[in-house]
Amino acid sequence: MELNGAHVVVTGGSRGIGAALAQHFADAGSTVSLVARSADTIKSFADDLSGHAFPTDLLDPDQVDELIPRIEHEAGPIDVLVNNAGLETSAFFNNVSPQEIRDVTTLNLEVPMVLTRAVLPSMLDRNNGHVVLTSSLAGTAGFPGLAAYGATKAGLTNFAAALRMELRDTGINMTVVAPGPVDTQMWDALEEETDLAPMLKRLRRFQLIPQKSPDFIAAQTVKAVVANKRHVRSPRRLASNTMLREAPTLLTETLLRGVPLGPQPRS
Ligand SMILES: NC(=O)c1ccc[n+]([C@@H]2O[C@H](COP(=O)([O-])OP(=O)(O)OC[C@H]3O[C@@H](n4cnc5c(N)ncnc54)[C@H](OP(=O)(O)O)[C@@H]3O)[C@@H](O)[C@H]2O)c1
Image 1 (cartoon, helix red, strand yellow):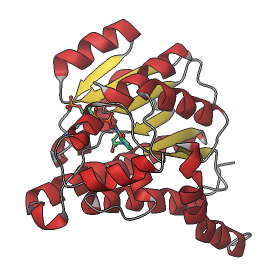
Image 2: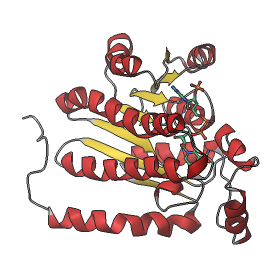
Image 3: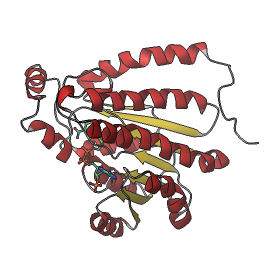
């Protein structure tokens, strides 16, 4: 994907990984549209980036349904959709409330699917586009204390695998970003006295979860979009997790080679 002159939408663009992604896409010459609840923050950041701000609560289905048409109307066709907004649950499952389960599932899994569905018609018309999904290392295996969060991220990864096969004959590509710990507000909250603490202590003893900066993840992601790479895996020392998880998908892809699967490019 050529990023110079592209229009990139970043959800969760007010801070953390999303803000770093927005900065890196803008540095690559893209016009960035930021989506988050913090209206003042994204408006002022969008001014800095010469982009656009679309204050939105993605837990409100009406706002979600109107978001993509609104962005396309006000800022033009979307070349790259980055589904990055997310929240975590960080307690043993018996301590997670039904509302928290609904919210994490909606924001982390349902909303990326609905927004992706909304950008597809225009991307298919142009036979060009890229969808980024911010999954997580927690989507590659079950981690205690992250049952609901990990379920949403595993769901995102499988969603991408299936949709990538459906879009195989089109010019639309997908990248799944699956980071371990990243130095953001979300990770800071996990490090506080949560139920995860003993697990994190063990993984740290084996030096398996080095913390990366949002800038590092954003730079890797932008490179992956330019090169149409399927995955951003971090930390490298746990890349085996994502690779092992990818094996059944690769087998399915091989078995389905030559079978008509989804939209065909328009002639
Ligand atoms: N940090 C990590 O260690 C880590 C590791 C793996 C994966 N990830 C994933 O990376 C993504 C970004 O995480 P982060 O660490 O950058 O988190 P963060 O610092 O907590 O940022 C979360 C972003 O999501 C937005 N957001 C939250 N609720 C929203 C809502 N209802 N409507 C619209 N926007 C909403 C927030 O903006 P507002 O509050 O302004 O709405 C913010 O921009 C998430 O999907 C997360 O699961 C993070």
